[in-house]
Image 1 (spheres, protein in one colour):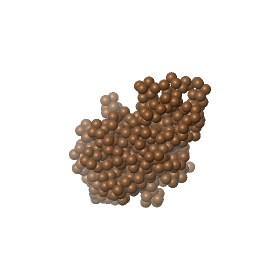
Image 2 (cartoon, helix red, strand yellow):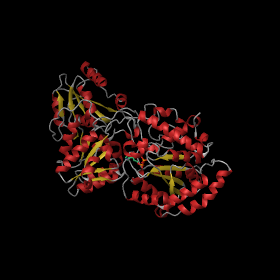
Image 3 (cartoon, helix red, strand yellow):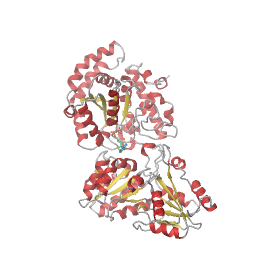
Image 4 (cartoon, protein in one colour):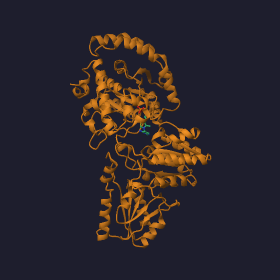
Length: 611
Ligand SMILES: Cc1ncc(C[n+]2csc(CCOP(=O)(O)OP(=O)(O)O)c2C)c(N)n1
């Protein structure tokens, strides 16, 4: 029986020796590769965190002790160890484990993660709850060097250091975010990594401990031998120590013996501790080690040949060639948003700022206030955290910052934390903000081109993951605030669709079809004309109905007292954890069948056409 089959919980794992743990690590690796090849997922990040996770489970007692994995995209080993080994085959599928840590999924998951740089704040909250209620358990926040570029990390360090609250931060440093990590902190960590302490400790420790079973007197004796060496070599790093956080590092994140030793030493310290471990992204899989960017996240499906992200990147690059005021900004997402091309061709006009969405937005405001045309390419769900920067720094100042909002709509297997279902709601409440939604690739290109000369205020272009299914017919010219009529209505019903997936549904049904290119401002002229004809309007959006496009249409019809029925179709008021785009749409009644049913009901009079 393999170790993989034998180990059903962390307590089983604690019975193994170091040699056995190493063999177990290899089995876990193979299993992860096997499943991710099929289902997709964050391959390279997980391969880098296998030993680290095993060592944590060996030393600590989860679920009494709480582990918070930052982003949570590296928590596969944790899931396999904590009773989800068989279920892991359904990773990222409906009914299977999420690709991130999720507290609704297992008692072993102390929190739900997905968005970066939250683990230190959440960890401190848990640790304070523990102290207030007089409990004793340990709190461990595992954070990557990429997540360490996020601003929340520093807000948390500031608080942790001063409060002196007992918790362990494990800094999993592979020198990579999705692409090569950026920034001064990353450079500082590199210096720590390269310091000779790491190498010296490594040899000392290896001699002392490798091959000895972890439990029993032999281990204790060997550990004692190197204890002094560890103390001498890793104490008192400047930055963290001065912040009030005891720094230990840097250690080999693939040496289970070394990690077990270090974690068991720091476990009993009554202060905040940071253990710095060095890992290799993609460790153990040749392709992933050599191309960690490609293997950061793999889809498990044949890649769509051409994506909206590619169109956005190429269009921006072409515009930048003609206009030297155009600059691109990315929060650690150059490859995934298509901005890599701009970075390669105009490196001085494309800024990768790390996982720092709030900073990106305010920085764009500064650029726009001084004559530049910033384009911030960002996923819909990650822009959520920059709401106040959009309101306070961009909108109040009416600054022409351009937002390229990728993954707007259902996202599939990344699940609940990554759904782009709120951007219309959170942006459309903001005065000054203009929101557009192209219906296909050519439309996306046209709209981005149009935004380069729109300077009245901020403008967002939202588009979903993947590419349009219904092809690339030539859209009409862009006119501010005007929708595009794609098909006249013969039955007095118009489906007004936001984005490519909704346009596909509208076109598939027996009704007039309109592309709501401008989500804000809405096309009042069209609505008034339709109302005069006695038409009914059905709005379709890949966004929450609450605060969405359809509500804005309805609000206008009501306030202008137009005799026009408006039916809103969109995402209902609950979080959506469906792991396929089609499943998410179907679960929320966003299908051609559902629209046909509404049309039928209007025609039969079940739904009264003119309220
Ligand atoms: C707020 C936010 N922005 C962007 C992302 C996308 N993202 C997921 S993982 C990742 C890189 C994380 O790097 P690191 O923490 O070093 O982990 P690694 O994958 O290198 O192990 C990024 C940018 C995110 N999850 N959350």
